Image 1 (tube, rainbow, N blue to C red):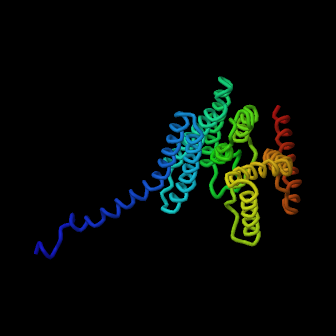
Image 2: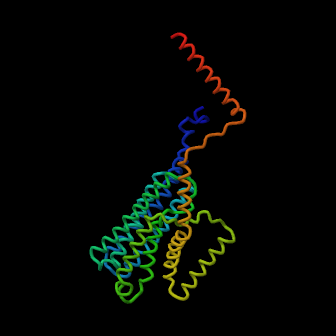
Image 3: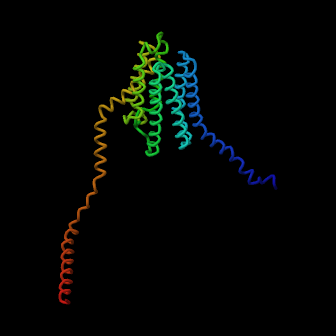
Length: 311
């Protein structure tokens, strides 16, 4: 009898692999995030090592690999339906390391070390603004639901991409960076990127872009520009051109439509503060109001007469 009828424990045992698979699915997107942290730490160790062009180039490439893992951890979480607040916070901490601290140390050792303490201060401002940008993003993400069409402020991976693409583009120059470009132009770029991250300038997410003729045309145009730059100049300039175009696109849209958008937002806030209008009386209700007032007056007059007679 015992062979033909398994115990309850034996009947529940096949469910354990499913539970383990669920745990694995939860860990999978976090592995992408941890891989991004590894890339950031590896970049920091390369930048802090011997100041050679090869080390700076490898440190920049490590940050680009980190952006690859950062781009896919959220998609993997949505695909496996394992989104969580834990994943959001871990992703932000990883971004601070990989796209905040690592690019700041890279640019300082690559170019701004010759400035001394001002160079340290400028790179620290960049890292701090990146952390502030991520904290604000988390607050907005918790407060809003649905697909966001715009980023508020320049995303920190794109700010880091701009700096890293500059390091890659100028990797093979013969003269030092301080002589070829100058320290203050690079310092100004770092401060400008820091300001854009904490600003309220909106940048497109392109999440609403569908597969249509307009999207295909834009994709072909961007590809053609990249190919032309690669042929006429150097392939290392392609990423620099792409990041520059995205940053300038946000600035252009802010200059053209920002004032109108802010005016519409102020009008909406003013309309929300106005008191709600009273509902108009219906014709039947308007006829009843004088009758009610007359009845109240007659009642008031009768009581007064009675009081005087009693006195």
